[in-house]
Amino acid sequence: MAVASFVDTALDRSVVLGYGRTGLWVRQRLATWPADPPRMDGKVVLVTGAASGLGLAIAAGFARLGASVRVLARDNERAEQAAELVRQRCAPLSPRVVPVPCDLADLAALRAFLRAFVEAEPRLDVLVNNAGVMPHDRQTGPNGVELCFATHVLAPWVLTEGLAPLLRRCPPSRIVNVTSGGQYSRRIPSGDLESQHGRYGPKKVYSRTKREELVITQEWARRLTSADVHVHAMHPGWADTKGVRQWMPLFRALTRPIIRSPEQGADTAVWLGSAPEAVQSTGLFWHDRRPRPATYALGAGPDSSAARQELWDRLTTLAADE
Image (cartoon, rainbow, N blue to C red; front, side, top):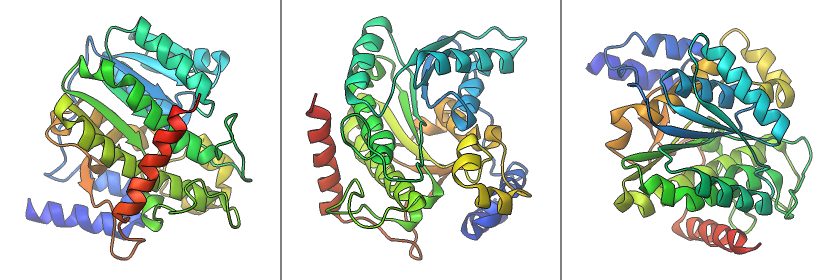
């Protein structure tokens, strides 16, 4: 076990081997690799950003386990297409997959979605906040909030707050936030939480908001512990998704020999939604079915308590504006 743990940690620290499919292949053959997740018959899962890539793979993974899956995409057409793709991927099974449209960057649309969802659904066992964007230029959503911040930070915060009553009905329930290994390189941009000042860089802002998403994961975990709602973050490693092909073509070309499939990247998110190990803790950052450090000494380091509080206060204010 000690040797297996050493190999796993060495892969993680190497980044290149650990984040590519080589790392997953090796870890799956170690004695420390956890068992596959159990069936989820009768349970309800909501996956955001389910129209393609990781989200689609995550939704299909839950459907194969027998869960009833709600696939959220930006509009009706994309949601319907996502639901049909999940059904096709799960054939000959006949999973219950329900399309749910919502533009997560639009706070009014998000509030309307929450009201309708809570009224229509008697339960929710797992929420997966997966939706992601990386625009080439600085963009804002309908509420004037920077698009990455609105999608990666504000929307998961509002969904967690709004769906907590449903999650409390199904203890132990789970929230899984899909972040990025890029968060290690950034801290919360105190004084400029939405990256409105200075030169815009897509990868920089993406990584910043993924760092902020990890921080709200930890904060929500603390606040929801007494409700038996377990909140975790994970990163998929380097996965070959539509977003990577569209926004990071050079990166994809360089990593093509080792880049993971969306299904390989989705593995830990699905595992966290069902495995018993995930409800033995809360507020952790996972990769390849194992908790990882939230920060590294060679990275950006931890965020100050003042910056964390600033982020929480700002999200509380934004969420209250309608």
